[in-house]
Length: 274
Ligand SMILES: [Zn+2]
Image 1 (cartoon, rainbow, N blue to C red):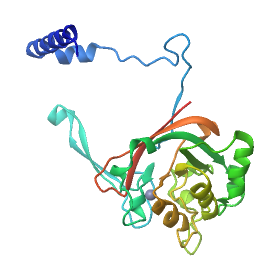
Image 2 (cartoon, rainbow, N blue to C red):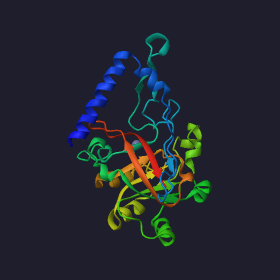
Image 3 (cartoon, rainbow, N blue to C red):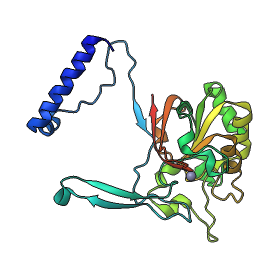
C-alpha cells in the first residue's frame, strides 16, 4: 500500500470514529440509499442477469422421511430487544441443498472441504419435463445427455448438470412432491446410474442437480447414484428451483453451499449468471 493510500484510509478510519462518537452513524446508514446495480454498468460491458435457483428456506420445506421439518424460533425481537434474530433448527438436507461426498462415503470430502473452484461452473440443463409428466418414475438416461450435446455441444469441462423435471412446482405440497403410492413408495424422477457413470467416466463434471428431493429416482431401493456419484468425489444438489428461468446452456452457476465443519451437505444459495 503506498503512503497516500495509507493516509486516506487513516483519515476515513478517523472520520468513521468521529461519526460513531457523534452517534450519527446509524442515522447515516438509514439515510443512505441502496442502489440496485444496473444490468449494464459501463458501455461495452455485457448485460447480465442473475437467476436465483434457490427455494425460500422455511418450515414448509418437505424433508426426507427420518428428518424433522425445519424449525425457526425467534430469539430477539425489535419490541423487546431492539433488534431481530432467529435460531434455526434444521436437518442438513433441507430446502435447496448440497449432498457432499461425505454424505455417502466415509472418507469423502465434507461440505467445508470442497475447493471453491469446484463450486462455480457452466450450467447444463437436461429438460425431461414432458416425459416426467407422463411417467414419474422416469430417469435421465445417457441418450438424454447425448441429445443435449447434439444441440449445445459437448458438456463443458467443470460443468454442473441439472435435471429439470418440472417437480419444483410441487414443492409447496409434500404429498404431490413425494407422490407416494399406497405402499408408501415415492414416485418422482431422477438420474440413472448409467447417465451419471457416463458423466463420471467420459466427461469432466463437478456436480449434478435435481429439482426433486433425491439424486436417485423416488422408487429407488438401492440409491445407486448416491452410492456411486458421491464417493467419486463429486457433489449433488437437491431441490433446485426456477430452472424454467435459465437456458439449457450458457449460464454460469455459483454454488453457495454452507461451510459447516464436517457437514454432509447443507442449505445452498444457488445463483445462475446469464
Ligand atoms: Zn440431500
